[in-house]
Length: 374
Ligand code: SF4
Ligand code: SF4
Image (spheres, rainbow, N blue to C red):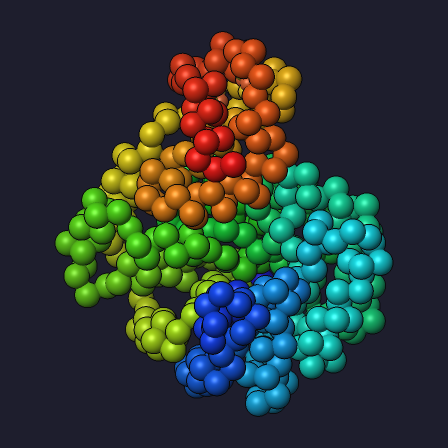
């Protein structure tokens, strides 16, 4: 990894869940509170801030300007933001986000510019709008120092993208201890693919959207017994902080207390011992035991589906809900994971069930999923 990237503190500040004045208004960011959080984070020697054009209804970037950019020397921090081309109606609108982001942030250049949320059917829009060439030009013009993309897809998709776009300086991936050997998420494989291309990684969702901080009782008890003094969040971060080829690990913080706790954990960090890894492995088994569908993610069912239902993803969402006991989280994840083939598109032909080595009652499970998530 390049030295300037390797020297960045492994604790990054994700600015997508900032404190609000009015909980019903995502743009009402509490700037005073955010300033206090930035101060604690910076005083602890951390530097990486991650925002996006869309976070907080577009208000996150301006909040970063007020709390950070206008209060600290430009060289003392690095800032990343993202272009959500797949959510924008035209190429021109997608290209225009960079100028808007620079203005909102009040910076002359970005340290990290990401194409936001690649994967599945969304990737085609980035190709169609020429976003790869656009990012490259922005780098040549000095508007951006490092270009990359965030991805919600599997290792094959990552391999294809990094092969097609070797100029990428970094990639942002969902990595955490629960997804590490998960047959769908395949976080370990994702990290291996990035490494094989020589591309360093920014880790997102180390706590899987906060779920690994609110574990089901069965798993929480195992971690508490293994090490009573370590919080669930600390287990999750420690797993990621020591992985190789990592630029930083994002933590989406919402309170001053979280910043204080996380910076203290980071300062006191040490590699997980063999015993602690064993404890974590048992907690993962306990979480997995709560799964309701024995789907392995093999994908045999998908080939012959005339309705192109994203069956393995739908099964995973049913398990995600059971394992996290968080219906809202599973429903939100279902929203973007299955946009190319909802459970309700199923016409009941039965071709998938004939192919499933686990003999899952797929048609029934799809009905259950459609009822829960659509
Ligand atoms: S039963 Fe439904 S999900 Fe299965 S192959 Fe037919 S249309 Fe697709
Ligand atoms: S064939 Fe069965 S086990 Fe394999 S992905 Fe489809 S539902 Fe899951």
